[in-house]
Image (tube, rainbow, N blue to C red):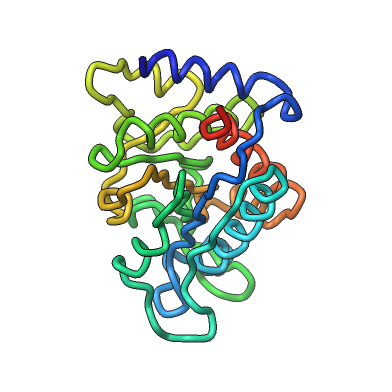
Length: 242
């Protein structure tokens, strides 16, 4: 049954966007990670992950609304030092057909090189680049994987390149790794607690490696970013619109 679902989703993504079925106002929650007080990693050019996540979240929100979804953006108040607790985030996930947690990918320190960018010394990496789509082994594994594969497939089939630094491809039960890898891949990630704790399907989307100068440059370009997130939205239609 799971393999048949995957095949249906991949077939849906291969047809034109206008031919995809309507999502019928299904709710997608966009979970913008990090905050003003915990801004996450610093990009190659000295920007914070929090700044990128807010922009990516807003563009994904617009792309989903344009395709007929109801959306809810979960984000820490930019004018407050208060943090959003895991409990607060979970409450905002209620009623969602899917949660997409938005983050920026980063690398361990032993991959760092250093340069002066925009008048300051920052770390960068040139070994890894590309987007990542991840799910947990724990929470809503089959439904989360289905949507993860749909999103990753839409990106891969549109020419976007997945990051190659993740060590472990998804395998759920008896499902072969090739299912998730064929047009994805999709990865396991247990580092972000809501992925493990959510009671609804949830995926983690990292649009690029922020410490890679080329990835950051692309994600700063509005047409590139909007086109990429439109493909993410198309993948979500393929997952939820059937």
